[in-house]
Every structure is written in structure tokens, then in C-alpha cells.
Length: 178
Image (cartoon, rainbow, N blue to C red; front, side):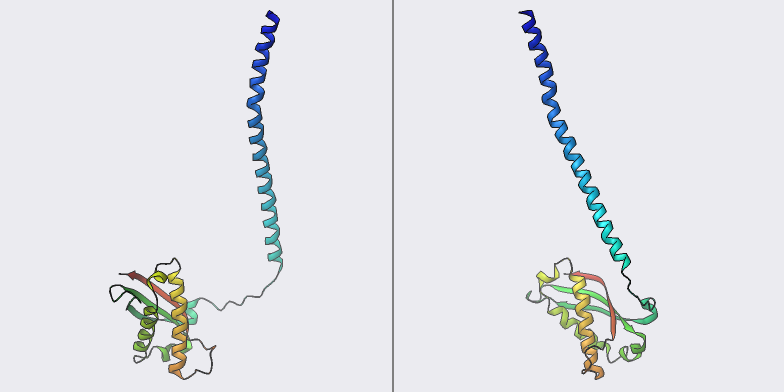
């Protein structure tokens, strides 16, 4: 009978230890699989980078922007937001970078009001939902550049050449929705 009690004690001690080892072994296996997959993914990604590096592409560098273009400060553009009944408006300071060869013709004093009006019209076309998105500044820059180039082609009499660009870059500062 004493032997039966000893066997029960040993079974209880051994059984408790084996039951706790199962989840630990499973956790270690999951970690090893995760590390293995991570290494495989790293190897696969590094293999793709090597392929990209082996392809050659000739890049012509023409220098920094300030050597190719000149800045023209358009000033603050203030316009009401579409659909807000004049209660809300946008204010943004705009600076455009114009190609050096076009800088004199674009920076004429009589042309600045035309540029400002073009930008105000573009801002007025935005709705409040569009202005609250995270990429509104990128959208404004791109649309301002496109609209200014279009308007400058009209003013300069080069409507026939849709590829003609005057404005290289638009810089926006102090963007405010009130």
C-alpha cells in the first residue's frame, strides 16, 4: 500500500512537470518559426535590392534648383472655401520657382495680379472635405503648378505648346484654415 502511495506521488510530480513543458515547447517553436521566416524575408528582400542595383540607369544631374530657377514671392493667397457661405477661408503664403530664362518675363509687375487671381480661383474650387485630408498640401502644390503653367502659356501666347512649363516648383507656407 505504501508502494501505491509512492507511485501516486511520483506520477503526480512527473505529470505536473510534463504538462507545463508542453506550452513552453510550443512557444519556443513559434519563436523559432518566426525568426526563420524573418530571415527568409530579409534574404528575399536583399535579393531584390541586388537586382535593382545591377540595372543601370543614366541620371543626368543639372544641379540644385536655385541654379536652374529663381524664386518669385506671390504672397498670401486668401480665399473662401466652396460651400461654406463665406464663413470659412483658406490663407496660404505662396512662392513659385520659375526657370531662370523665364524669370524676367514672369516677374513683370502687371503679371503678379493675374497669378494671384489664378491661385485664388484654384483655392476657391476646394471643398472643406478636400482641405482636411492629409495630402492637401501636395495636392495644392501640384494643382497650383499646373494652373500657373496653363495660365502663363495663355498670357505669353504659347497655348499651342502644352508641354511648355514656366513654374518648376511651388512652395507653400503658413497654410491656415479659418
